[in-house]
Length: 325
Image (tube, rainbow, N blue to C red; front, side, top):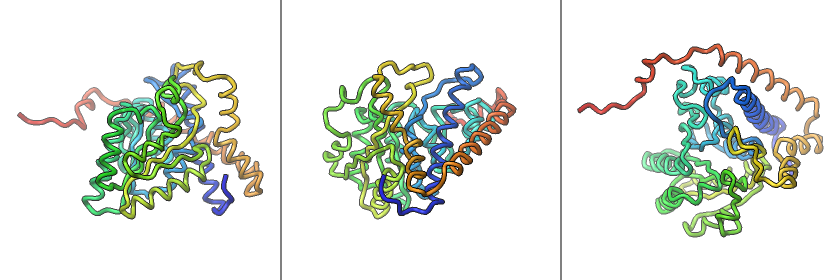
């Protein structure tokens, strides 16, 4: 990690957000395994620094779009964990009134367009939002989070090409966790780095350590500032690792044991904790207190979500677009 030039308040906020994502995901995982929570999930344990580093470089009125693995992005952008937990339980008080579930988490008031489960499907949405910002002469930026697998979809090429030729204020963020579901990225991508693909659109392509939240923040900050100045998109590749299965029933047996072990030793929260304590920026007791406070907060959220009201059958007819004939 780079030499520290940030306030302790900033660094602790970064730590807190990463721990909040991790504990939220871990709690949700057990709720599913216990059969208490309906639906399905795709989780992001191990990728917390990517979401937090990028979103901390954004303004409140900037927007993000996400994938079938959206919980971390939502929390990092400020979506309430109570509204998210309610949504996962299918409650009317959920951020999408119980109609979206895990793969469609979002809150427009917090700058998160509801996530798109189709691989690559959110990339044109971010490009479209950026086009709107440019046409309205607003100093806002759109971010598209995607996995490495999405960069092989046609929507990726079409949307990034459009963002480039129109010089749009958009940041394309590839969370390269080395696997598209169970397929190693090296089997489906020939270039050394996915960011190398930026050259064909004549936009900057940057690859950084996605498990270092400060490195992610600094790279995102530079790309966002560039976009806000009217200088167009950046393709930002964050090298990370998913220390959980692709989805809730995936034991991830395709990940070699030694690779998994290295990934656990390199996961962002433990690394950042060592950095903060090892450089005498704070104490382990302070970080332990943050961990405990978050654990208590999440337990309260789970209890409240289970008590929340279920939607009524007639609610299915609300929030629909019906064209009169």
